[in-house]
Length: 217
Image (cartoon, rainbow, N blue to C red; front, side, top):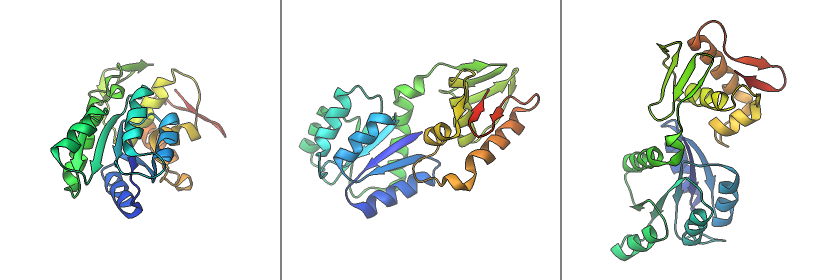
């Protein structure tokens, strides 16, 4: 799951992002509406957590332009404007849900996950190659009919590799797809995840490392 948090109060934005990451959710942060639109133009987010009162481009305009652009991600408006009229206005702009500040963080997480399940990205058909089958909606993986238990990062890496249909996926592409901008490329998280994924998939090894370039199935 990939989430964009758009909030001009930097401490709040960073706190929300940190809390979501603790729930194994990849999060990018934008502190103004223009930055949010630029990020959404090249990243296919599952959910956009959007404040309404933003600098540069107002949150209402961000929501409207996301919808006009045909983006598939769901929009959760997160704002202090909590009157019924405010909620109606926000939803009429194309928002999928509306949460008023202050809020319980557990509720925010639950709403983000519920919206992600409704995202068109969650309706991707099952992927299969070389006896490995992955069902994105049910989040299940099998190899030659044998269930394979994967953690979130392993599952997402495998989904990207299967989606490439045997073509090379660079290390940078995998990091951008599975980890967020907060991740440290120097931690070796991708290498560790690939190693664990290979072990869980079993023999023969299904993932080929192309030195200096990336990986492919």
